[in-house]
Image (cartoon, rainbow, N blue to C red; front, side, top):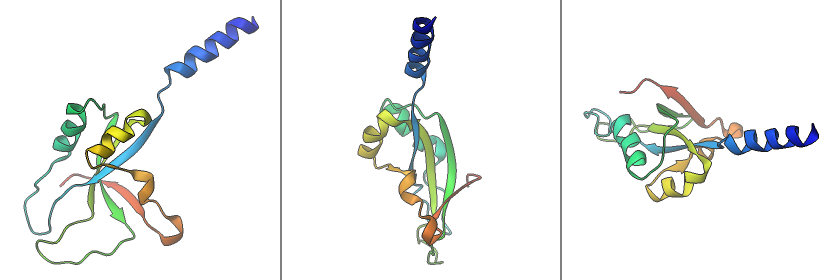
Length: 115
């Protein structure tokens, strides 16, 4: 019985993929049409062999941004991927979303509707 329980536990653990969130600025500018969509960002990961478990548009919070046409927005593309794919994602310009979180300074991100 103990052996069966141990084997079942090992198999279930082996089947669980650890995931994490990565992000990339969406590249959009104030007062200008959208240049990079969430689908474009997801396709970039897929074409590199990285499966996006979930994908969302989001905005960085707790940060000031200059309000002038042509300036960047705080929009980001946020993807949940396998933790084992983080390095490949970094090579494409993505960063770990945990880097955006700073509770002491009130900085983070919030999922939003895509522009």
